[in-house]
Amino acid sequence: MTGQNRHQASKPTDYRLQLIIDGVITRFTEVSESLVAFVAESNRGRHIWFVSNRLSLQDRIATIH
Image 1 (cartoon, one colour):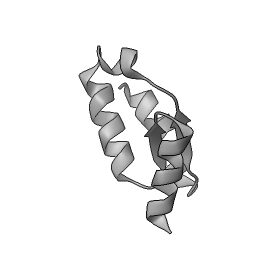
Image 2 (cartoon, one colour):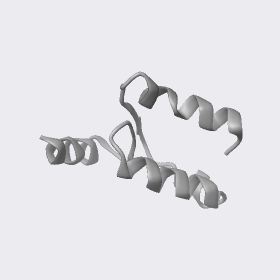
Image 3 (spheres, rainbow, N blue to C red):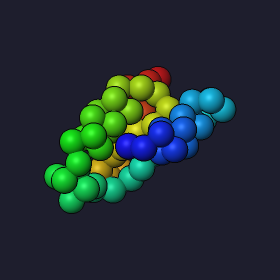
Image 4 (cartoon, helix red, strand yellow):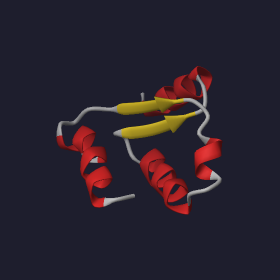
């Protein structure tokens, strides 16, 4: 990721918002190790989540309540 991308990705955290990316991004993660690392790091947090479908999102939400 570039510095500008990291800056934009930090916005949800700065404003205490959540950003959820819903969908399969395999074709992008297959060619970018840095994206794989970003997704893994993001999914450990509470502000940016990558989920493959709505059921995954519901499961994720259930773990925070």
